[in-house]
Image (cartoon, rainbow, N blue to C red; front, side, top):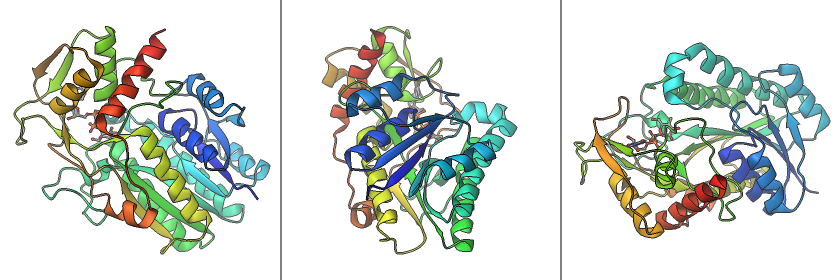
Length: 339
Ligand code: UFG
């Protein structure tokens, strides 16, 4: 019998790509989203890619009764929890809003999972939990540093909540996937990232500059102790990232977990500097980008990249796309939404 996966925040950037890969892998997907930070574009794109309508519930996971009702209406074998606020800077200015939303929604999911006989829970975590570290690449055993923003703190707190919950309630199993920097778009150019206002993240800023929506890309700092002076990150293709979720969900549903709570880095293991990324974007897409060096952005770590060995060996997942392929997809998406 087909298994059902609930994707909270399924109309967003990562959720929509995960929905496509889960469906392609044979899962029934139920999407739930409050559309607080997205519109119907990605949902429509998902349906177009898959050639069918998927169940879509407009709801807020901070609403405990609505969350509980979802678990009554559907027999959910696994839930992937994306629904959360994600702007680092805003979280510093609006900590209560961030803690309330990101913690309440996850607690409601766990409470519903517990009272409905248990569930497999996949939490969308972040490499931000590692903070600034001298020992690179980071493994899952690398120590977490104190979070530098309320947003980062909600990721750490939700990981801990999940760990404690599976310990207390054996009917709940949990996996936290720690994403490095997800970029790119689906090769169909039907789904992708739709930042609200001025993008905080590098790749949407690059594509918006290339298309003329922004005048000039600021490269934040070229005096870092890295080979070219700009920060290094582990940029992971969004479709590769989505596939890691399929592996993790299948591991949980098939009862293959070694422990009831597991953590995996989802990255390529390949450091890429801001300048290298800009150069690769220009080269693969045959254009010149207007950019300048500006002072460092407060809060940025110098360099971080993953040791993805555990995900490679235990999940049987590996990042496949090159950074050039990913940047070509990001550009195709930017052009598609400009039409
Ligand atoms: N950068 C620029 N110019 C820009 C935007 C970014 O030079 O206009 C640089 C940043 O300084 C950084 C790199 O590009 O060196 C990547 O920046 P992003 O904002 O794209 O990504 P971050 O590594 O800062 O963000 C990631 C995740 C967040 C997470 C954060 C925690 O995307 O979800 O780490 O620090 F919260």
